[in-house]
Length: 65
Image (cartoon, rainbow, N blue to C red; front, side, top):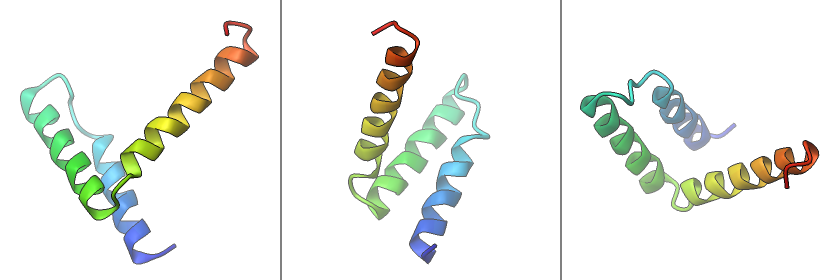
């Protein structure tokens, strides 16, 4: 794993500890997401696409599609 990948993984892990019910938590999440996108443009779009594919597969497997 490259240093950049390690840095991105560390940023993503920071998202898990945030309280998204608070304004500070949401602001922190926004900052971290902007930082991830600045370091690796397109990362968030790829994650959204992979999540959508995974959800579609899960719906299809459970017969909800």
